[in-house]
Length: 490
Image 1 (cartoon, rainbow, N blue to C red):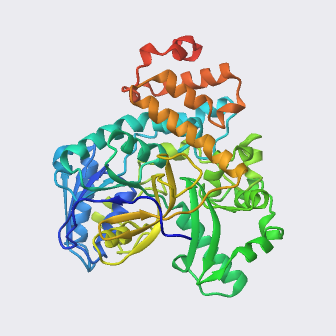
Image 2 (cartoon, one colour):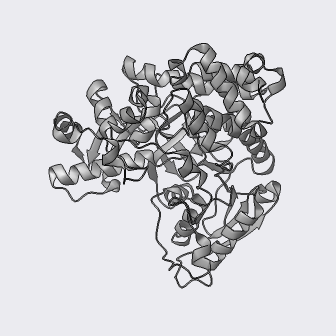
Image 3 (cartoon, rainbow, N blue to C red):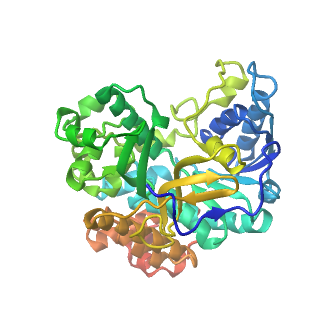
């Protein structure tokens, strides 16, 4: 794996590790923000965090939680951080060293339609969050807002490092750069980290190693949620021969039914899609099976039975609708239960790498991890400028993508089609051109399973179901919507 690539993303200002200012846009987050607060409390850096959110009470709750961790909680942080909620985006961003972006609209009004409407047209998406009809509509809702964020960052903290956690990561990160080309933004995702953890398990079970994620290095390349690995080592030992031996064995050739999965979490990952793609293409996917199936769309044919056969369980709209309610969601962190003493609080680290990256940026220690950045040659045969995911070296004031090479034609073809969808939608967002966005929708690999008129009706029905969240798109001038019965009926 080479460390050289034609360019690096750099910040124009040094960060003082004893006085870091972080602006958290989406600071009312019910998952990422509590994780970040706990991780920062165990870091070797100090600073302040300004929390901004469309729902001020949520930001205020997280600010109270952050200050409680550093004051009243019965724990001993190794650092000093203060938290403040603000109802002004300008105030949050002004002079910030880092900006964290982590937002989501009410899933009961948006996400549920992304899952349910395509299902009526025979598209049985497993997650519907980053590609396919649901992922594209999540992008249509989100990209215009992130153009506004990019413009505000350009005005109030142009040299800040920007960490985007918001899905769809590739659409959103690409839009940030499209609006403000000099932005220092990186998209972050933990799917590759999960693959490294799984490979550590393989090394432990098959080679008798005592290994964890940090012992595994991979050469990763692709786009978010559709990344691939063509080199894998654990403590310097080549894992490729082990994987090649396993792919024909029982471990890599299992079949499942709904009954087998009924009691499993929606996040269950049996790796059967991963093994099948490795078997067919000779490179190893590096994302969870529930995401891979939406990019390699053979696996979502035949509805529930076809999906379950591969050990994947669909994330239903009922699960998503509860995401904002801690009492109902097993994915949402209930900080109020800690603040009220209803649950015992422990200061434990998350599995995220934000603090590791921050330590690299301030000069504490170089760090290598997977990031999403515009392609400047790190993936040799994908479109220049498209947001790709590879490893990068994080050093003081610098994130340098590592050259990862390219792909054999079949895999490159799969990835390039998704890149074309992403680029088409982002380009359409410049002018809010609905019909241009529909072109990106129409070439999506899930949508291609439909007749064009069906695709138009699906698109129109999704627009109608969440029209209030598409203000920046020129719906009135759309020829596609004017033709569609599903939109005219509304």
